[in-house]
Amino acid sequence: MLCAEDPGLVSALLLLSYPLHPPRKPEQQRTQHLPDLRTPTLFVSGTRDPFGSIAEMERALKMIPAQTKLMVVEGTGHDLGFKGKTRNEELLGAVVVELQKLEVRMQK
Image (cartoon, rainbow, N blue to C red; front, side, top):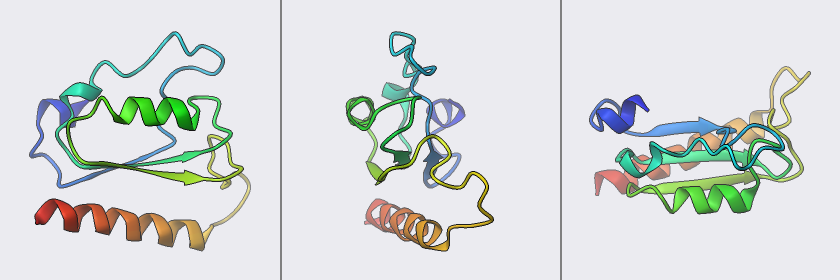
């Protein structure tokens, strides 16, 4: 929400498992500020996240006038598969690469 108020605050956003709504309450959307977002944003979301399905995420991203990208993590929930694990280097590396791509496209 802060970046919606001050677009120059950061060069890009990384949102991991953004909660579009409380679990099992899709009518309680948390998207009011998305149309004001002018910062390029990478969303990372699991296919089994109860806070928002991939289809719901795709609809929400269309509300954002800035450049966005949705990175889907198959078979994971809100924890993106990190619960109880010390690290997942492959996923972390992929997130860094996608965020760098977003920033490069923004600079052009």
